[in-house]
Amino acid sequence: MLLAPLAAEAHDADVIYVALAEPAGQPLAEFVTLTVPSLLRVAPIDADRDEQLSPQELVDGAAAIRLGLWDQMPLSAAGVACAREDERAVLREGYVELSARFRCGTGDLRQDFRVLEVLPANYRVVLGRQADGERGRQFAQGRLSALNVPRPVQRSRVTVESFQEGLLLTPAWLLRLDVLGLWVAAAAWRARERSALRGAALGAGGVVALASLRLGLGWGPLAAVALGS
Image (cartoon, rainbow, N blue to C red; front, side):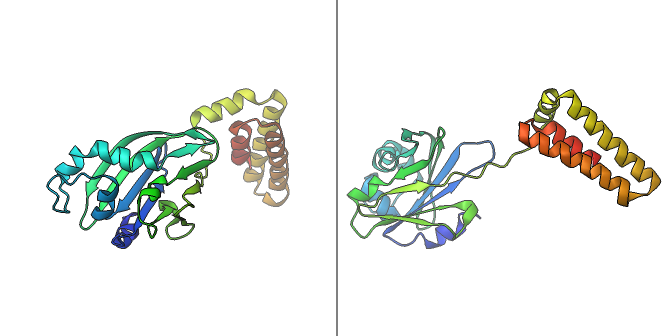
């Protein structure tokens, strides 16, 4: 479903669509959509030369696809080439869908679509990310073949391990302040005097939160603040 907009446009004979995806906990995935004639220009895998492809020809031509296409559009992080794996090729109605996964180090990502050098001058690459849809697309054509690839935004996630680690790194005086905040909140709840007492609990919790962020103490004290406030 995420690739449907790209597939609908992929009938343009002189366009190669490249979509990036960042599955949680998995290497970066890249999908390349292009027409059969476009693929045959860089990877001559049409065994019977009828300008058509069969699934078996895609399997038999895996090495030629790797050499003529994947090797000609390397992805790197801070100048170090990413390791490519799990290459696949699927024949769709009217186009071919190629995919691979990349394991990259830290640093800015950059991809050089040198494959354009062996294609007619009117060819271009449209690079986007599945999560962005139509927004943020980039274009490579002719000599302007290298594009910067935005890295996915890493969202922090609370786990049992990070919670325990935060507690272990929290000084005793901060833990005592956490307990005080919990006690005040419990007293306020029992007395139904939320305006003053709960305000005091929130104030104590705020001090803990600021100290935790200042000292980089992990998730332990912040979680305790959330419970206490």
